[in-house]
Amino acid sequence: SNVLQSLNGSINAVWVGRFLGEAALTATSNANLVLFLILGTVFGIGMAATILVAQSVGARDLPAAKRIVGTSATFFFLVSVVFAVCGWIWVDAILTGLGTPSDALPLARSYLRIIFVAVPMMNLLSFVMTVLRGAGDSRTPFFFMALAVVLDVVLNPLLIRGIGPFPELGIAGSATSTLIGQTVSGIAILIVLYLRKHPLRLAGADLALLRPDPALLRIVVFKGIPMGLQMIVISAAALTVMGIVNSYGSQVAAAYGIPAQLWTYIQMPALAIGAAVSSMAAQNVGAGRWDRIGKVAASGVGFNLVLTGALVALLFVFDRPVLSLFLSNDSAAIDIAAHINRVASWSFILFGITIVLFATVRATGAVMPPLIILIISVLFIRTGFAYFMRSVIGQEALWWSFPAGSIASLVLAAAYYRLGRWRTTHMIEGRPAAGEPPDTGLGVPRQRANLAPETPAS
Image (cartoon, rainbow, N blue to C red; front, side, top):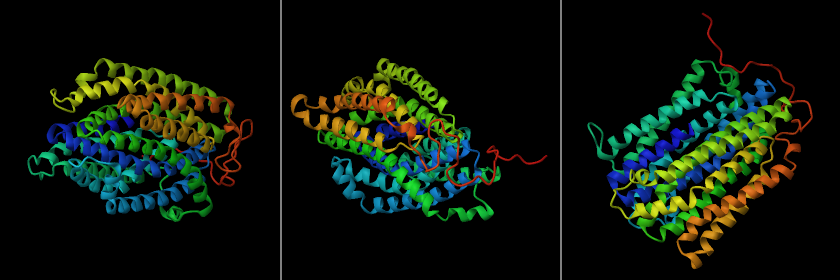
């Protein structure tokens, strides 16, 4: 699913860069960073809900899982609507504050306003998929992410260029294709879950669970905010670096935007492995099987080294052919992009290990230490290096800030994993610490349920 989502963004960038040029590519790069910040803000709520659902699944407590889904879904969607409305209203202030180049500003405005309209459905689809993964179902999210990507990729050139019966919308067409793909897929996944009578669906009397439970909402928010802030810290660092890059003009900004797009692929294995590790660790916490958690983390780190390392190696070998997909071969931005990639891309192997370690400790409810580590390593060290070292090594400070931040985050994350008190942390009071028997933490289970989807009688 993560690879498909990144492939979607890259193909869209190819269409925009090829059809509309460097200024349009710079516009989408700036707009997508703003979108990532918004998604990061609500990311924590989804992650907190996912961990709680996974713990309830591990404890075989279906009623608790449904209560978590109902409370989280309502809050998640309402917050998304608020962000969409505020983003639409203040889009000019956001882009101006980011220092978007003047030639890219009108394009970024058109693109981002449509993306803001898509935000509620994007977040709804993301929430449903993360909850399903927390319950152990990764196939359904993959299918509907594929549906969204196919619609987006197919509609992109049609709406940009006005091919056939479609209107010529330019850069707005790229954003409109995203809106259509996410909306269709989000509605479709809900329909399918109800038709399949999925155990976590809310129907009949369960619809009352959409009214937020104040006690449960407090847990989701207070545990989710630090996880969301982790994404905000990463986004804020990216926005800061992008703002500095923008000061060098559209050519350098476009050059930076291309490897930044490719780096999403490099990080995909770590993000996917981290999500799997978090769900598996949370289910084992719910089941009281702490003896398995260290093995889960070690396996995650091993897979990350192999998969992320392989992608970095491929990008080193085939960097120019890949970069040439985004811009014409005679563009000077390609040389700059190739240099940026070689300086920074290898550092994502180290950051991938950090992601896996964070995913492990978060599964127990230890959400503040990873946030503090990210603030130190990404916000202070990475952005500080990029900003203050410019006077010494110029533009190189921007690219070398990535290895500096990744090394710092890995050292601190490994130290906390080995020496920290995360094994005694509870997501909810009553959850078992290491060596304790399992307890749902949400009351005595009323139903020990098989969480596989119901199959109709023949």
